[in-house]
Image (cartoon, rainbow, N blue to C red; front, side, top):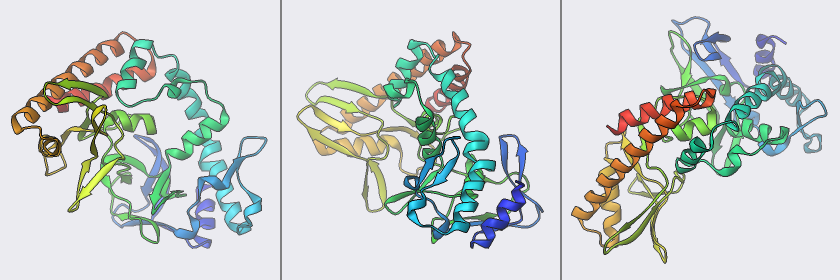
Length: 329
């Protein structure tokens, strides 16, 4: 089925896809303007957003919408065709299988570093087709209110760290004028290691998160830093990592060491945040200096391990780590 036919079905259901076509570019398949002098516009309205819980695989491993939901047959026809010819069945299964086969072959030394950078042991387990589907869907979701939704057609736009933002209002909207390929910024807050874990490709980042680390500070106790960067506090519109004190010490759910887009420096966020636990300005700055040096060493050692491997994923991780180390310096 041609992409123009998919767009006809999309538009008939109330979707908007103006001045766009699907072509291969620098990042593989992506959305391009038909006329680069005119703006593009894509709108996937609320009624065309899809809940992952609606979906299942048939015997041939094609995505199907649960018929018990009683949804519009025209919508079901559109979405299932879309996934078969331009989504899961077309690229999803093979890409994820190839990626994971390389991932599980990584040397143990590299896997140990990835655990420090926020990965989980089950990332390296053998996967079945359902695991692949869940990973595929997770990389294509957007948060709308309290729910995660899939956004057909809009999701075909490739990522760039300096791409435009989606507008989540009455669905998902994206527009603008582009001389070349249309680019969106998927997540501005992820650092490059976290981004690769979710999306499986290398993207430049303006952020470096500390690795998972526990440090013991005289007269303060232990400070445990994780990489749960969804756990935030918002005060007066400023987003900061959640910091709490418990029996085991001070827990910081994540800590930015570098953020080239945030006007509030990560050092100030850390020093101000930890001061609530009676940690002085001097000690707070000393701890932050130590964290910078610790992470520099971690990335340097990680790069050395990656260089010893011929694994395709290891080579991508090496490139990512070099960029992160450059930001730290």
